[in-house]
Image 1 (cartoon, one colour):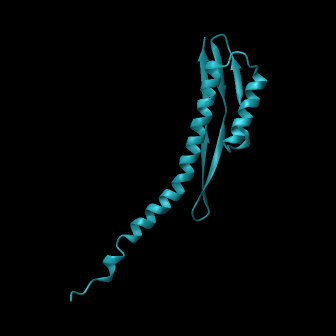
Image 2 (tube, rainbow, N blue to C red; image 1 turned 180 degrees about the vertical axis):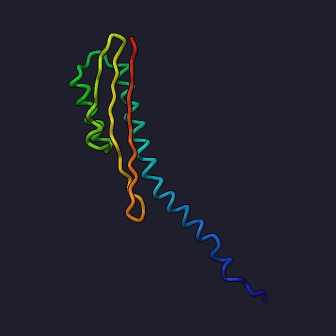
Image 3 (cartoon, helix red, strand yellow; image 1 turned 30 degrees about the vertical axis):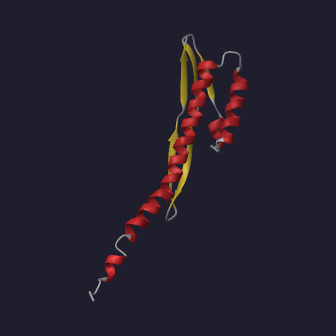
Length: 117
């Protein structure tokens, strides 16, 4: 019978544990970026296709969208600017993601869209 070294049976456990922690923490980052992408995409659609809605209706729409995407409350504070060259819609907000060992990472998002006439 061949004697086996005990370390070889646990050799894969540590890398799997590290991969699980990275996946767990990374999922919050991925969700934050996906929500920002969806919010920014809605801004592009609104800027390109909305012609009949007034500014208050557009801002109300984005407040509801920010709420449904579970974005921070200040994400719904959308700014709309009309110039002679077009329309600009933008918002600024930050998302704080909890990390292990009581650390936090804050990510700043600045979604915007512009439609030129």
